[in-house]
Length: 296
Image (cartoon, rainbow, N blue to C red; front, top):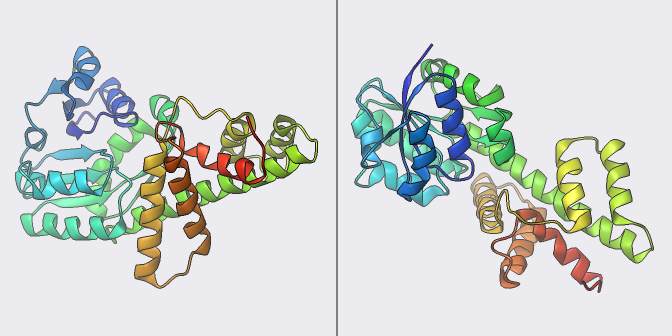
């Protein structure tokens, strides 16, 4: 079934995601703050909207995949006013990693405007987005999720439904990102100890990725951390810090102590203080090596 869908946010994740929607036969109307990023999609048949608000059609579907809470709030509360533009029957699919509290607030604004907001953050890096291998967490009203399913089928390999509470999928997403960051910190510490003890970091990472931790996080990030390969960035360090700050704020709201998240926040701050903002977030693991007195 072919749908018309607006799409805002053509960054490292949004661009391949929108391209897959076009490839699946959907009519896609795109907008990005940096207009030139829309050119490859226009060449594939996308319609380039003159403004962000023009991607939201009355009663239509809009996907947003923007960097942070402020960008998402600007689309709903600012000049774009997508909740009002969508209006009755309209659906806003928010695929950004944002605070659950932000989704809860914006979903209520959509409800008052007659439209519906569902959260649909994803797990997967840009290469996974290009290959339609994203894992999608979704939450919100059931009818809206059913309407969005053909779009999810075009961009991902599976959907995990966390119920009708709008922000539930965001909680699931930040839990996952917290665990990825914690795994990277643990690998950084283990590989530093191994290196100081005379082991080859790469050999240890390869063994662990095939045995005790035979999963994508330990295999992909394990190889990158072992070889100190943190560029080009699939997910930049400042975004990692943003996500850990969301973890900590959500934990405070829920009265759930997360001491490891505090350590991770300090690791991200250290990495940024060292001038590593353009590196992949796996570069947080460099601090463990530096703590161990290991130079370049």
